[in-house]
Image (cartoon, helix red, strand yellow):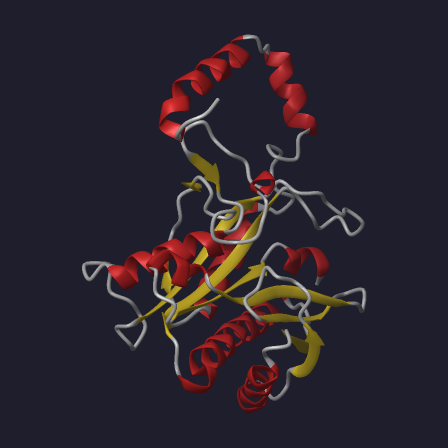
Length: 293
């Protein structure tokens, strides 16, 4: 079927009605028992709520946004080099959120372009800082060796957007803000749950364009988070715009767990048609805290 989502929606809805009409109660229970897309999370909801509170408290200085469960169709594949197959698409021109950082890019672009947008916690009117905790659903292959991976999972996402500054100033300060928030979250979890986040580490990855950027990030991290071990590696993924930073600590089994992933992206520049705009976003796998630490 060709055409816009609105033109094909009626036919898709008819097909779904027919499929649902052929199902029996036993079919529902059978799918519920075996399908990772619909099974409940392995986390206790009270624990998940406690982790959400600690995560949002750690993201001080960021506006907390409660996202819709769905986003515009193509929110990932249109602005980023990723496949539409990793999302669950609906029949109404939307898709289930598979990466909240892409949706935060939309909200950042809206706020930068719309003077009537909600006021921001950012001290600069030309910058936006957003945070969200989202139950993310992702259609991708799983590695279940540690039992911690699942189709849907709890994710804390942070996003900074605004005009670029000399000497990569916007990116450097955004990276430091994100990692400070995640470091505070580690501290809060240690106090609240008695877990340990030993040998905290930041892995700075840049491509051939970014040695100077890596040096600036490492220098600033040494000033702000001296207890975090800095590591540098080459960036080999084209998903990021020249900068990727991992953050984590040793888990209870003694292995390093890279629980947070941060990157620079050109998504807001694309959405606003303004190449001066920068966007730094990151995600922290909240549900890995009780499962691996």
